[in-house]
Image (cartoon, rainbow, N blue to C red; front, side, top):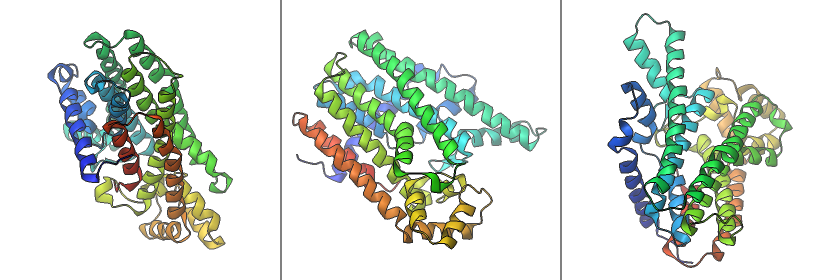
Length: 365
């Protein structure tokens, strides 16, 4: 299998991002969102860019099975916006103030409230920001589903495929994703010593892998032009993307410890203060001495932890092998993913999917 050179892959990724941006910011969509605050809130993250990895696997899975990318563009845009509303709500849950180097939606509109309504208390301004963000996520969810319908309303895709994908996205995918979010929330209040790697990876797959699996599945079915869930090519792409999704999240957790905050668009170490249960933490904790374990336990999930203690924990996570072992775990999932592509007929799309998988753990943001 030939592999796209990194610069060629990035060029291919960026070209799809431009197509999606043009589609998402067409006038017919922007006119829906009122008042002006809602338009800004709904489009804030989409306007800031992003890697567009989910739309890419959808489009390339479609192409790999003989479909036209143009047919799948509404679905690619839909999953990007579906993903975006989960980020908006996730930022509220995690109390994050930054996303992609700028204010999160709730933080942005907290500041708007302070400026526009100076009589509001600090608490009321924060509540206003959260309220706008919740409503924006609701609108984004509906927008994504609406875009899915365009494959049949304005395109020639069999409506049975479109209906199947909408039902799949808003039932199985949504419920598994929310389950993963709740598990993530619950895990943050449980002792790190109580976890096994499989517990954390199950949560990661539900939070991240299930939507990647859907993207590959959706692209494959659109490419086939029919609902054929037992098709071996569909099954292969599902397995490929599921494993890549877990690898992606492992790399995210690694970057949360050793990444560059400017490139990540959020403070390094924030996952520690939030109490995220990651394999980086688990692997290092299991190898740490008693004093190190005590420091990890005291710092993990402590929003008031000092910078010095966070840095000490980061150093422990690196020195005790948490980072290296998590990177190995990500590579293990990619080793499971790569052979799934062998069943696909040779094409530029198969090569792009291989490069996409490589990018999942080579990226630095």
